[in-house]
Every structure is written in C-alpha cells, then in structure tokens.
Image 1 (cartoon, rainbow, N blue to C red):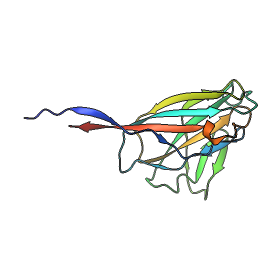
Image 2 (spheres, rainbow, N blue to C red):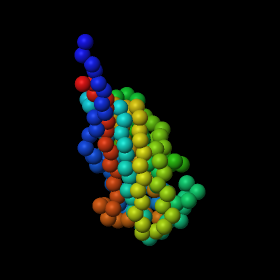
Image 3 (cartoon, helix red, strand yellow):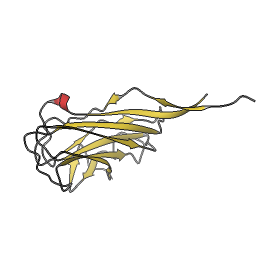
Length: 162
C-alpha cells in the first residue's frame, strides 16, 4: 500500500483590487470580489500597508487606526449580498440594497503618527467561496493620496495529498 503525504501548497502573493488613496476619515473602501469557488483554498495570509495623511488623531479605535474586515458571501454569488454592507456606525452602498452582510474584523492597523507608513498582517481560516475586503479609515484624517503607498495582498494555501 502506498504511503500518502500531505503538504501545504501556497499561491504567489496577489494584490487585492481596492482604492485606498485619499480615503476620507471615517470612510469605507470595498474591494473587488475574490472568487475562491473553483480553487477552494482553505486559508490565506493577509498583508496590509497604509500611509497616513497629514493628520492622524484617532477615532473609532480609541487611537488612530485603520480596520480591515472580511465580508463573506451567504448566497455564493458576487452580487446581491454585497449590495449593502454595514460598516462601523455607517453604511456604504455600491448598488441596490437587496441584502446585507456584517463585516468580520480581521485586524486594526494602529496609525498614531501623520505621514507615516504602517503594515500589519492577519490569517484567515475557512475561506468562503466568494468574499471581499473592506477597509475603514479611523485615522482622524484622509489617507495619503499616492496609490502605491497602500495595498492589501494575500497568499492562499490548500492541502495537497501526494
């Protein structure tokens, strides 16, 4: 009888499509949908980078910060349940308001100083078939206006039996 061995397979890092440059204080940014229905990855490692603007004084998180959220689908589609997303103390509308999902807080990037680059990471287990990321700006000011100063990247993994 052959011996089976399991090993983790990682994807190359991928950048999430989301606009973070010049995001206003208390503003929300919603990423493009990420389709995991075919690949079926189990988890991912997330890396976030943001750069504060000229003001960073605090807000929702008791000190200045940026919250990163995961929004899971409930119906397996890329529309409908993303139409209305409830954020911390507010809502963002990207179309018709036919459904809602509660964002799942992944991490908070604390940003106590102005005009400074910050990084954070998170791991997400039990990935849904389709999901999005949401970023809430609670820095007390607008994020830096240069798009290249911000990103959300991830590397997925799944178990392969060989």
